Amino acid sequence: MIETILVIAVAGFAILYYMKTGPSMYKFIIDTSANIYDKYAPFSFKVIQEKVKEMGQEYTPRQYAIQIVLFAGGAFGISYLYFYNIVTSIIYSIIAVCAIPYITFLRSKRIYSEFIFEQIQVYTTNTIMEFQTTQNFVKAAEGVVNSGLLEDPVKADVKTMIDMAYKDGSIDGALAYMNERYDFHMTKNMHQLFLQVTREGARDTTEVLENMLTDIDVLVEGVYKDRMDRKNFHSQFIEYGLLLYCMVMLIQLLLGNERYMELLQSPIVLIALHFIVLFNSYFLLNGEKYYNENVGAE
Image (cartoon, rainbow, N blue to C red; front, side, top):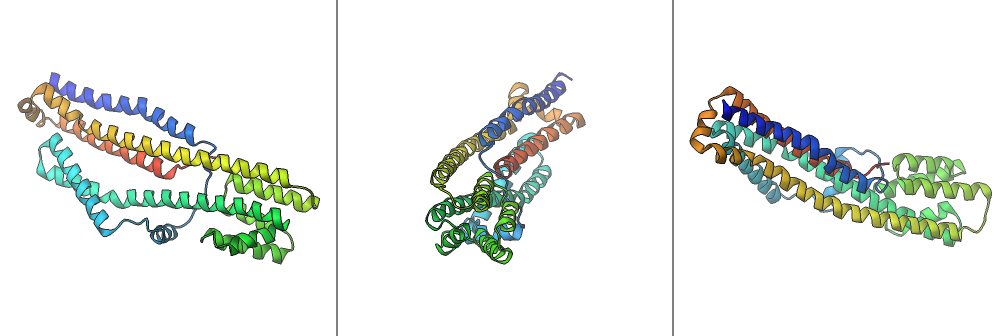
């Protein structure tokens, strides 16, 4: 009876640990990323995968094979330490392998979002610099397109914006289109500035544009610092999550392997152990999802 209570207590400790540390861990990410990244327009998974492949960031068959071996082997080893049952371990291994496509998808979304952010940085920075020469927003945008610095889909959208401006005879609708496609503060602020300049007529914008370039530089610096912080935190997060799987070793150390094997005959103990494994797995997947998806906030 005491041993059963011990197992349940460990399961309870896992829950309390997640409830206590989980939000504080996520708070670190939220605090460091807030007001740095911005939302980017939703794109289909097909577009994301094609761009990731074009960038050379897609996993090779060898890398996928290594992932399968690591996930299957890790899940088998951990679950066997919990249940000492080959069938149960095989089931957990299959579940772990099934999670690989989902994790790969999350990774692709992160890579794509970072790519979009960098493209928007190029678009805003170079449009401002071109405008300082041309004093015309549409001509400045054309100069950025012709420079070869932009890549699709941003390049294609800038071309569409230019065509809309010529067709409408104004930049209002064109800027609204870009703001909707790329919901970044830097694009909205820049577009608002050029809209005011167009409506108010020609005036000296040198100082204002220089200040905006400085703001963008500060933003980008914060973004890359945040990426490093998030990457370091992610590594620690995974390490702590894997260590929590090893709580069963603490139980076996306290009780002894023979007594632990006897406990495995109890349905209550088995349920508690399955709960620990599944809850910890859910915790890790949620953390992985947060790291890869929530790359910023408005």
